[in-house]
Length: 237
Image (cartoon, rainbow, N blue to C red):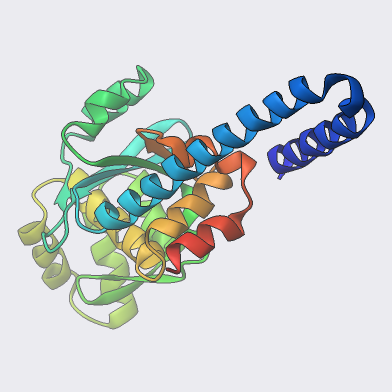
């Protein structure tokens, strides 16, 4: 909102200048106004088409989604429409690239790279883990910890009164590495967050520094200067 306030003050200032000096510098002021409005129109056109492109591709194109916890990438996956997620087993490679700020390597051939903060999932209470409910706090404990499959199996078994060996066997049959299981838990959290709002939720989260987006097209470059209702209007069309 700071950017919008500055924008409004600039417009008011230009109006005042126009009124005061219109008699002497009318042609100059008129020329400046013309350039100003032309720029606004061009930006508006680019913004419109960029948002429409984001609407079209966000749900269907491949996305790489990573979790940044205290400056380190700890889990991630990629996903396309109607495809099962691919959980990353070698998460350290992504962490190294992130430390080097090599976003192009992180993105690869995907349409978008999304790097989320833990705060993005504050409103999530439970996720479904192989058919059993697991609360958000335990899910993050497993994502951030070690021997996660064993700990998750023990928790699920205790909470649901089932043999821990059965749960652990199911986890080990579905996920070949601990990092893949972490990616699965992270994907469940992402799905719970995005399932109702999609791309517009990304816009709002970006404005509140809960998510990084690469590449940053004009929509994301102008976010600080535009109120949220403008984006809401676009996405409600």
